[in-house]
Length: 484
Ligand SMILES: *[C@@H]1O[C@H](CO)[C@@H](O)[C@H](O)[C@H]1NC(C)=O
Ligand SMILES: *[C@@H]1O[C@H](CO)[C@@H](O)[C@H](O)[C@H]1NC(C)=O
Ligand SMILES: *[C@@H]1O[C@H](CO)[C@@H](O)[C@H](O)[C@H]1NC(C)=O
Ligand SMILES: *[C@@H]1O[C@H](CO)[C@@H](O)[C@H](O)[C@H]1NC(C)=O
Ligand SMILES: *[C@@H]1O[C@H](CO)[C@@H](O)[C@H](O)[C@H]1NC(C)=O
Ligand SMILES: *[C@@H]1O[C@H](CO)[C@@H](O)[C@H](O)[C@H]1NC(C)=O
Ligand SMILES: *[C@@H]1O[C@H](CO)[C@@H](O)[C@H](O)[C@H]1NC(C)=O
Image (tube, rainbow, N blue to C red; front, side):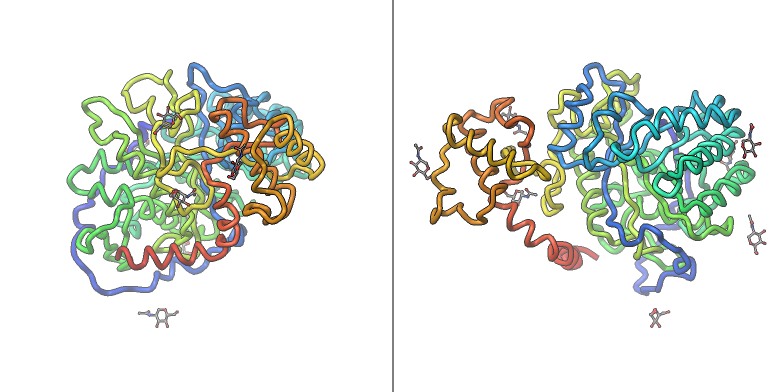
């Protein structure tokens, strides 16, 4: 995880040139991507760094992820305790080969095979491992290991094939944005030729195996390096006046935010190497909430705005100007502030939560379903978990309304919360009643593990379920009116 990864300084000026009122179709570049994941929804996941003085125990961490409805995480290693704790949950996980293990794995097939045995086969499918990220920003941070990157990836893949897991679990490697040059305008981007001997076979591998190109993309660094040229609003996904939109002079595509431009730069760079069927997965993106005097844009407000808008952007599924049909999933960097990371101050301040799981700031993501905390309320509720059998729930419900002395009068027949008449709805009401009565004390939302805390009012949940199908269209048209 190298955040010092800088985006090549760019001739952005000419990119920001005019109001072009022409609206062009996406260029021919956009049409030939076959997307094996097309029918799957794009998602937002989280990176979990561990340079944290008091990290939650694996069990607490998993509980926290469930409470926050985080269903996708990326780890920088393959921690056995955490992989165990993730078993039998719906949380999907990318595990990683740290850079310091590349040498061993890249130079020995049997080491790669035993790595797969130890870190994948031992847990899958109870733990839903979806991908292996092999090294991190290897070309730019440990170039001496670069020759081992592809051998490592291929031996790990071969070991997955031997276990017949290669269709379920993808193998790839995250790159820094700086492997691309001239990223603005995106239509002129290309991979630094220094790495062609590695990128060409790597992309062929990704294409052949249906794996994504993993990119760590930070509009924050673009802004830091091009202050005064790239508008801050553009980096933060804020609404722009037309004069601030970036127009790519070659494609006439309008870019309203830097992240989309970076993703399209990756597609163009691949296309320049004749690869057009590999999907971009954003393995890291984020914004620090605190910085030193040289990092004045690392503020809570900017971090909140960036991450909130990023989440909404992914869930809006509008793709990029070049590929409107395809929305990249994004892993936010990162879940927890890593207080043990060395200076600058921003290094320790990328998290949405402190290590003790209290939020650094509350996101503005209302409208994005039940994902993460809601900005407008600090209220928490206790509800029944998904997937618990009715008998277990009934027992917990009986306890809450009996010995637990919850006020259950409203879920009696004929009363206002009787409908929907099912054990899950009634249990949620009773659990929440108990939890509120106990002053939301810690431990008062457990019920032997069948309850969980949420920021969504249970009375709203039913509506949300019903409205889920409509909300995406609604949000889209709302956005259509608000900007551009
Ligand atoms: C844009 O695409 C549409 C649908 O493919 C086509 O009808 C239209 O002629 C295109 N416009 C331009 C300016 O190429
Ligand atoms: C690893 O296995 C592959 C495929 O079987 C083979 O081509 C390669 O030479 C092996 N590498 C080593 C270091 O033994
Ligand atoms: C391409 O990468 C090499 C190796 O890291 C670097 O020395 C060179 O400066 C890069 N080229 C450009 C134009 O940045
Ligand atoms: C890409 O295709 C063009 C045209 O067929 C060819 O000239 C070029 O060498 C190819 N590039 C690579 C990296 O394969
Ligand atoms: C949320 O509530 C807790 C106690 O219920 C309080 O300590 C905390 O400061 C509140 N946070 C915000 C952002 O209002
Ligand atoms: C239980 O809730 C009902 C409805 O909100 C209320 O009328 C009643 O007074 C409550 N009973 C107790 C014992 O608090
Ligand atoms: C967020 O809070 C607002 C206002 O209380 C509410 O209308 C909305 O439904 C909430 N959204 C979520 C996702 O909880």
